[in-house]
Image (tube, rainbow over all chains, first blue to last red; front, side, top):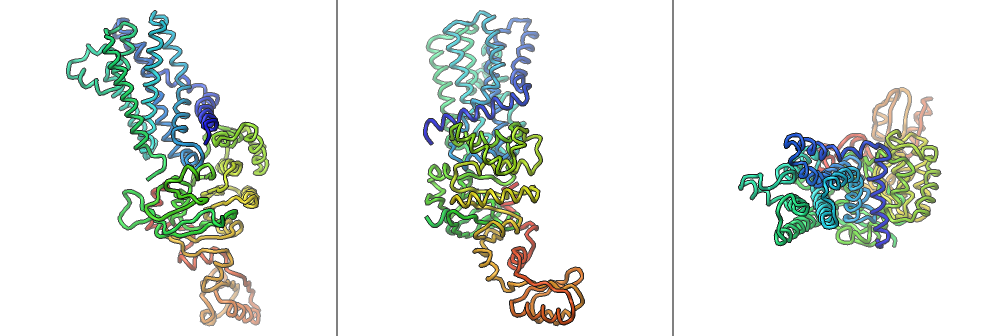
Length: 248
Length: 317
């Protein structure tokens, strides 16, 4: 398949799974807003506004992670119920193009959510060239590793109902337990150690550090970037080696 | 290339299936280029497993399959641009309309917009789907959804089409339209691998057929070859009272409502017909149907499931 055809396939998937469903059911665009805004609302109320900045930065990370859980559900549904993946496998479309296109299509859903949070980000006076660049880099990496994880898991599920089991667990492991919505210093030391195993800890640390919510040295930022990129690379490697495109 | 697909000693045992339960067991086939090849067999016989292996969706356990001269193991990149598949029980994405199902599939395969639009228009016309082109898949009957899936692969540029029970749920008129489209595709030198439960469909469409049972090819050849290979190539139906013992000396007799169905060789069939006419009993004589052959070879009707081949039934589920 030529590069031009790959790009055509990828954009077709974005159209097919991202834009057409929204045309069919506009309520989809509110779907990804629900969880991050609920958290923000909850945190703002409970902390009496003190942690609202964490709610905003955490909300963006959760929105990107939700792209991954949405992708996981869609890929599983398409593979098992509709046999769409089988149809695609027996065609010129390669696995990376399929996953890339599907992941980008889920990204489309996240636009309204991101727009709300970017608006709040600007309102909180966090926005400048540096913080926006850090935010963009972090969100792209979160989107990338969440998509790789989603694809790998989706190829193993035997029924769509298994995604209902795994999605909340993934959200719990990657957004609620790690310090995405609060400073890491709020955790006891053993929990701070455990949080180091979650890539979202580094994502949140980078964003919180960039906007001045938590102190972050240049060396600390470099380590966070390194670990986040490393996590993403490992999840891509796992997807490349373990995800099932052709069934065993 | 005389054969589009060649399978040699193919075997497939699904992971975690009970020991000894192979979905495909030493299956060898040669599917000629530019023909419609029918795979017939009961549920769980191994048809879908074969299609999934040949269309590069599933790894075989052992043996080889080549498609258009390329091995399905290791040369998938050479095969995939040249094939298209309608998997068993596949459905189009529910939020698309019929036109989008075809058009977006063609775009996905890398066709440019103009070519994709032209092919979409033509295939919708050919399969009488034009009036439904803007209708959402979620509002279509099962038969129309299946027809849209067929339209999708027929409109493609693929040289080999795999259609796994493509006409399930279609009404007789729609089935005939799909048949005609398949024949036309075959005339364009495209190879079509068709699995079906409908023996009339297999017989009407296929240049060659393989009767698959428990993962093995039991009979293979043209419909005429298959008839020639069965013990009793003729069927005689007698409607009226006739001594059964007399019939049993001439062929295999099964009672039916109001008479007997007898499978016999040509001379014996003529003899039965002659004796029936002498007695003034209504009689009909003709070559055995594919259904009769299936029953003769397998010992069961095609619409019964294979209990022992759980591996494929499970995989298909």
